[in-house]
Length: 629
Image (cartoon, rainbow, N blue to C red; front, side, top):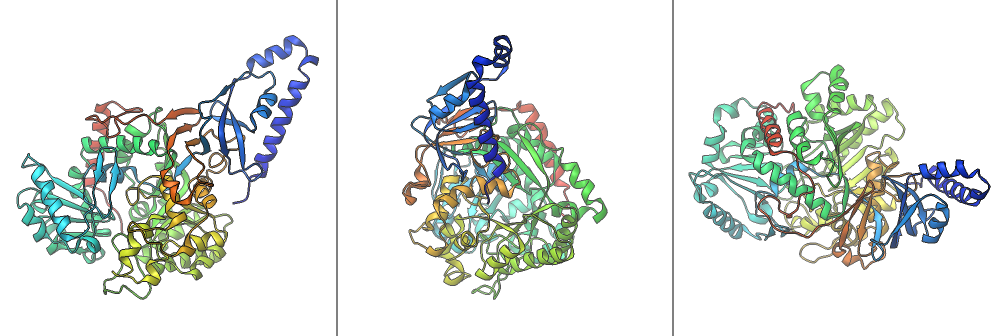
């Protein structure tokens, strides 16, 4: 992305004015200058081992001056002290041995999903290293069923529901209702797929939550086609349909609050200063429940949301979409807010389910799924395009990407728009020709660089082939094409750790230690921009965050080393000292396990009664929610 010339000019003018003020101080009327100087706010000059600015005009510096929540100037220490003149300042050495980089941005994450999955019984395809302990991977069907049985045995209350997340059929083998009934025919068991797009139930869960033949008969043809009712397996649209029935178990107020406090602490510990969820359910009570934790002034990051287009166009005619979309902008408060004129759409299914739509089909004969049927997708795309919204589109397969790019081209030809910044999200399976088309159409990419790390070794022999699995998330081609790209974790699809995402994109070394598609590795500089400046660009926030330049918000992540110059294989191991978030210095506190918070410290919390009330309203709302697709 081109550098911001006005900001560079602003920095030069600012330094000149400060120097001129200092040089002419003796000529000014003493009483006037004294009053003016006394009225100036004090500045803090933070000295560091190195400041990585991502400003092409000055890529590195020694110090950064902050006034309030904004950056005043960047440069060498003596330069900034001299430029300060008579303005009061202090020099802080708190970061003298650290490296300051722009504040990390969690470009696409899901606090609700992360809160609920991370507080379940985690039995996944990889180890999850969490403050409350390490959830070890299950490598095969036998290990998975054994771990599930052990989890059931640990529950002493016979009425307690067993909720587990992380199952994946290509790693753990097929799973049926009979397998779950064999573990318990009395305790309800809910298995949440690793993708978070599928559910499996046992008979006791069906009985408890009303997943009956009568309920199933009332569902749409699309939902029925994505269900295996006899086996109690529901995927994609069917998973959305069953979710309101099981939400009282998944999102009890206690689980939800504990999970959100985990999210708050976890992201801060990994250097995040700003986050975004592009498109969750359009539910005001669910937003209120998230606000009860994330919106407090003491939260260590600001968190933005983007409206879910399919919920709105599924419920309202075209002429009401603008009005209903704008209503949602008022749902945030404090440290949470909705981004105006931005919307999330969904094309095909999840890569972790192998439900993406791929050209040529899968090697084992199964088929992909649409999260929005193509006609519904085309209508929703057109409505929001004509409203001049920026579109963020979830798409995983190359056939899904063809559909998305076809709609983008049709709408550009019909109604050309400059700088539309349509975001291709996830970007799992694609071709070089599609990369060229993305460039031609003016779209940008937000890729999940963890996909090849977790999945390439398995998928190259299950469902796909090496020619499609190895180069998944082909960010090397995107970087060479000069397309703006960002990284996201889609937490819980990958750990919400920006340094780990950088490591994944730079190295492409799988969990089993194999290098896959080395030509798709990206540069270390590109990877840092992908979690800072280009992430900000994808959200239309680059004027305020993403780089360390005068006038921008003072959002910094404080590291023990420079990820742009360090050993590429050690990027994920760089220690996070803490953050500066809008001028607030927030060190990462030592973890001390307590019953209430997994990380052992609370940065801020709303009264428990408020949270319980908001959660109860969100559950009632979801029980009657209509998804419209």
